[in-house]
Amino acid sequence: MIASGDDAYAHFARVRAAVAASQYPARVEYAVVVSGVEGSKTQSDRYRAAYAPQSGALRVQIVTDRENANPPHPHGVNLSLSMTLGWGHGGNTETTSTKNLTPSKAVEDLLGVPFLKPDYSFGIARVSEQPHQEPAPQSSGLRTIAVVVSPQHDYTVEIAGSETIGNIQTEHLVLRPLHDPNRFRLRDLWVDPVTWLPLRAVIARNFTVAPEDTVPWSIDFRTVDGGLYIARETALATLHEPHGRFVSQASVVFDYAPAAGDAPSRGGAPPIPLDEGGFRKLEE
Image (tube, rainbow, N blue to C red; front, side, top):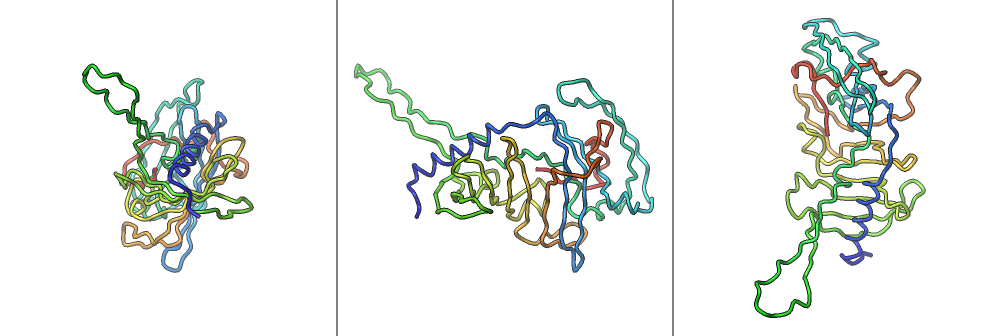
């Protein structure tokens, strides 16, 4: 059963408010696992990361665990850079990253080095729908008895019924953009009607580079201590990557229980923009 449009818009507003109200600790340590099938070979790259939600500081180790275990033959130039970065609300930490920029680095990374923040909401938390008030008429001696206010929506929203995800009976919202479809990417949301936090979303496009930004993705979320985190991002079509590569079953998984020492310490590799020819960045 599809509920009325007024109910659907009200439910979507509750979802946005719940996501915007999420709470996060000062520091989140995690690993990002990028996987997919290239030809007949399954490849998985694991990157260590740490993130400070309050300041937005993100640290990503650009060398994968696989590359650490099997270092590539050096073909390029060793580059050493240093940068002072703020971490949280405390002092600054000076870090140095040394990277051998081999021509094969962009090929070795399946989709690119994931500079991904775990609290990214894909536009769900952004409350852009503001009430529109009709301008008051010019003075005519008539008394104003009412002001007409109408909402300006970015999407049409419908409630398409309920579906079970895990052991939770969710409410399924279907969204269609009213303008700027490349900017307003949400297409489906499955939300917990108790907390109003999403468990799953389908978006029309993802990330900031092709081909990842040209295919739809399914996003799974998890909630921990009042915070909404990305759990998994799954491409819903084959990715035609640079260098003539085809990657199917592509996924990006966030591991919030990494092994001891899995996340970079304060002295770990910062997100320094090295030579763009050296590696490909995956950003949202």
